[in-house]
Length: 125
Image (cartoon, rainbow, N blue to C red):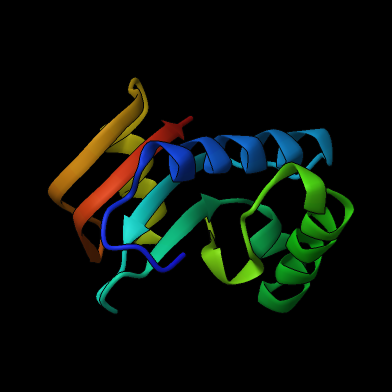
């Protein structure tokens, strides 16, 4: 998503996508928007065991299938999504640091091997 600031409509679109993923049986253990280093670029990070179970490319194929079936229900694009293994240092630290929290901004915070300058956490379970 190419935006300089994350706004309420993008946060809502992320929620819609997470609902679609749940309906499709796609497990997500943690989810957050992260402002990337590329100016104006945001990614929806999805911590999912699917990444370890079937690999990176097949995970993207499953995400594409969810988006294709639900095109009228979300404006999220495949390029907005970034699946992450729950075994990664980032995922472990995200879940450890934010497990009790939901729906909140995350600013200027090191998490695992990444630095979150600007982000929005949906959940970390």
